[in-house]
Length: 141
Image 1 (cartoon, rainbow, N blue to C red):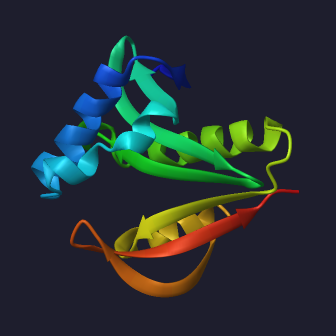
Image 2 (image 1 turned 180 degrees about the vertical axis):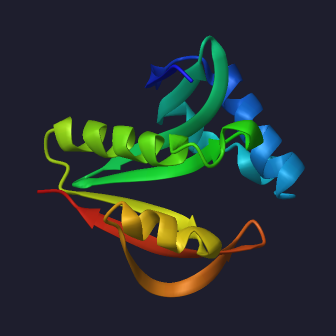
Image 3 (image 1 turned 90 degrees about the vertical axis):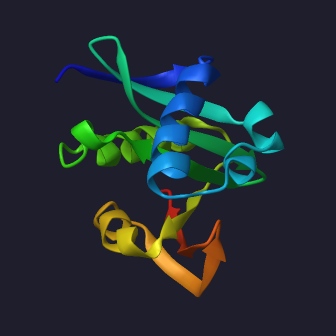
């Protein structure tokens, strides 16, 4: 694998990956997967030798960077790509003036994954698109 993770304007590639993972695999209603926030978000795309394999989006509000819509296609899972996407998002947040923390809503089965990357769960478990989630935060140093 020769992966490049970078900010992208190729929303079609991001949306195609998100559709495959969230709508097709996880059963998220298509009308909930894309929203108006996509227009103002910073989008990350992971590409392996020209083929899109993962994506995420970031929203910046006051001192907070919110990471969401993190997805990796099945053949690239278990390779560390998901962690690399999160590290790339955290690095962008850390370089953004005024941002002091990174927040995300994790599917509960992925809490351990995010904890290994330094995130801490807080608040109650809630349903998002019919899937249990819990908020997590990482304080930037």
